[in-house]
Amino acid sequence: EDVKKRQRVQKSRTFRDVSEKLSLYPGGDIFLIKIDAIVIPTKESKLHRQLVMYGGPSLEKEIKREINRKIMSPGDVIHTNGYNLLAKHVIHCEVPESKPKSVHSVEGVRLTEVTPSSKRSTMSQSNRESLSCCYSRALDIALKTGSRTIAFPTLGTGTFGLPNFECAAV
Image (cartoon, rainbow, N blue to C red; front, side, top):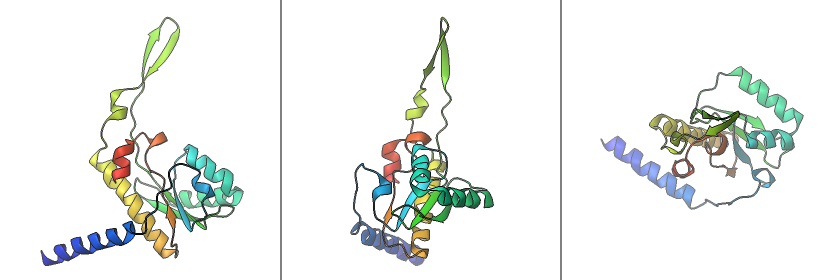
């Protein structure tokens, strides 16, 4: 029990240390920040397409090679160099996603996609744990690469369908 108490205190102390050095960068382009490391989802998304566009063909080749070397599960991360980016390092996270099924209704000959309410539902515990792993493993890689500054987008939102507020809380 004493060990658990020390771990909680240490975790709380670490959080305070980090939060004292935290800066929020609302909006803008994460690729235009001069920073040591950025964190990006591994799966195809608008952010991933921008990464390849800014980073160039060498980055794209390294991403494909690294992702093909390992079967990625939600919460896993890999590291690549930044190449043409302002960031020296890119940390790629396998982000969990909500997969609501689209329901179609027929109105004459026109099909209309209906967004089910599950798209707006709360995040599962499994997705919350996987997302938490993304953040902590990304920070571990940042430490190993000597990165002193790191930029995180709100992982899991947008393309991946997880609720913004809950992802931000993780």
